[in-house]
Length: 249
Image (cartoon, rainbow, N blue to C red; front, side, top):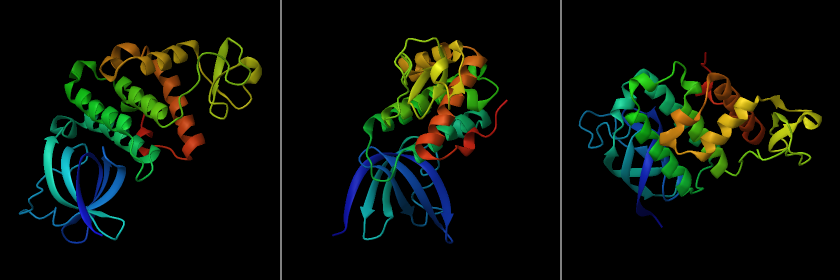
């Protein structure tokens, strides 16, 4: 039986469909990632206006029919994040977070911790001062922090307390996604090399809040190692790479 339901959502992706509609990928508080259609959203007279653009945090009423797509019947804007959408660097960082959620979480799998992390990420991104922005979005401390936290809540928290393969205290010299964490020199068969600075950056980014990411990330070398750990985790656990991470210094 068809019914309507209400939820908070972040718009992950918006795709033109037909003459005036949009297909949306949404991350909702109630049901996780879902697909929806906003009929007539591209018409100048649409009641949705610009409320359903990527990055938007919205309050939606959705109609659940027989098909795979829900239908958006009402959309109220909670936070537009226009500042991030209209700034090239912030937009690139924001899209990294959106794509990470899109690829890590399957449809219909609600995860309130991931939803609130994404919503907070977009808020902090708006608040970040231009002087605090590094040159490369892929190495942005905020982007790295969110991705590590999303891996955590998705069940892929890297083990960093000792060697994930043999249990020794180290020294730790690499990261093995198949073992699920840091490894020592004797167990680094399929590991990527990670410096001590890299492990410190990863620990700090996991332990500190998103708003403290800039001060916790460490130097460029540590952030590069953190990014390599994130990407190897994506490839091993999900078999994907983020297109938004393709450009880097």
